[in-house]
Image (tube, rainbow, N blue to C red; front, side, top):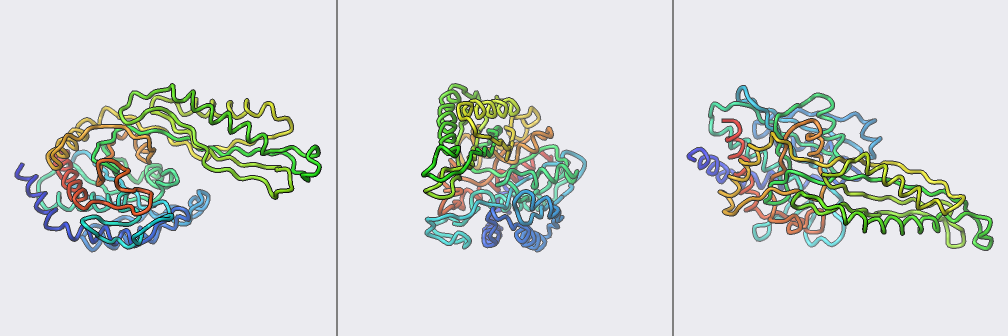
Length: 407
């Protein structure tokens, strides 16, 4: 208890510095797309070095980055070894969705108003660059003989699936932690999340002059049949209920449609991009087979239309692993002590790159700076912000939990 008080006192004494650190991170834009994120990693490494934390720079080869539709990625690892014992990794991502419309504050200003810090990624998840960095620094300030190590993983591919972020670090053998805490977005401890299958379905017909429609094959008319079948499938999916708190049922969303060339031309080609969310109980391979069969069956009554189906993303669901019990218990215990209310465990319908650690058998929990619910922070919307009291509290919780795990 005395050590917890010392951690809290160190965090309070350095909290203005933590806020300035987060402001500096927000002021280096990382909209993805286009995904030119190496400059942010370089600036982060400079800021960490000024605090005595050496960050290893791990640039992803340009060919792999370009193939993924991005421009540059450099992932960072900070390693602090205290003694023999488990390696606890803390992962947050610096890439973000573009700001979009409707902001009343500068999305890259890091402005503080009425105890709230505004900016793109203030809540998700540059905030946890700050949470995890200052939790580690607070832990080091105790100068205790701890058993284990802490690693900071700051990565830059979450918005495009994580394969070139944590996935790349793990695949290259650059890290193999025993436990993981990953960037959070609410006061809850998240231990499971949905998976996601994204597909591009291209319908090829035959373009022709609208005055002679019988000479063409209307790909858009076939697309209409397909869309009806896809949306009707949601009625089936609503009957598949998850047993994980916070997750309800699978869902199918059509997010983009492109097609046609002019108003007086029968459309010869239509592209449909869809997103199929998978609950943790579903098998990803079976879901993909089901989706391909659904598309094929829906177009059976459209003669002359050729279909291409391309998988864009397959993100498997995160399931809680038995080894995360001590980690989850520590976060819940200290979360309740710091915030004065019970901290539940839950699942989320989002998908994250935490699954990439889970797929390699690394027990994980998602926890960091955030409000009671993710919607309160406007994460990924205009005027995204973070209550500074939540940043302070989460830093305390993570620092205390690290102390528990390494003592």
